[in-house]
Length: 190
Image 1 (cartoon, rainbow, N blue to C red):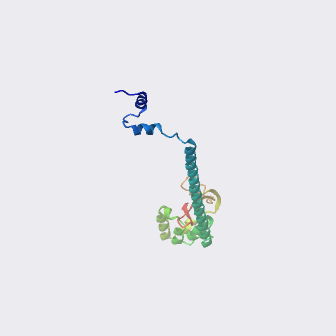
Image 2: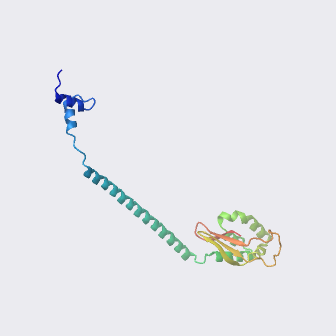
Image 3: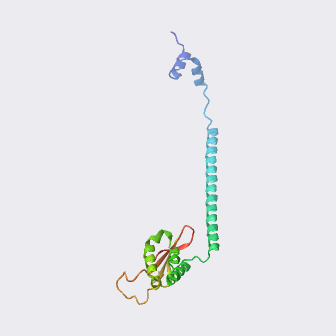
């Protein structure tokens, strides 16, 4: 079993479990890594990723702009359909409905989500024919104290002749308005 020097070197550098000479030849003829080509491919992948992100961002920006345009257009159409729907106009409509003992008129000015708070008391007052007495407590609006998104709050003038120290006698000194699902102002708290 005489191994010459060439066979000893091949045995020494052969991969484990490699027994045939073709595997040894393939290991000796292995090409070096082309670092320049590899870096070009990686750079192309990275640049492609950034281009894809840019396209996604542009698409999202376009969608947001379209949604904003649609919202502004719907608000414009709503204002064209009922340009007099302001919190001040709704409050005056409510006062007139109270003075006229018009139950349906006053209920129409209250936001549907808050109707449960006022409906029973208003119906009772309407049956007794004393809705007009509540009109005395709806003093004129003074100043807007809160205005954000779909909520507006106004202070109202104090009720004349109401010098009581009892907080229950003082009634509310503010009125809150909210936009309903149709974009119309309605009273939510008084």
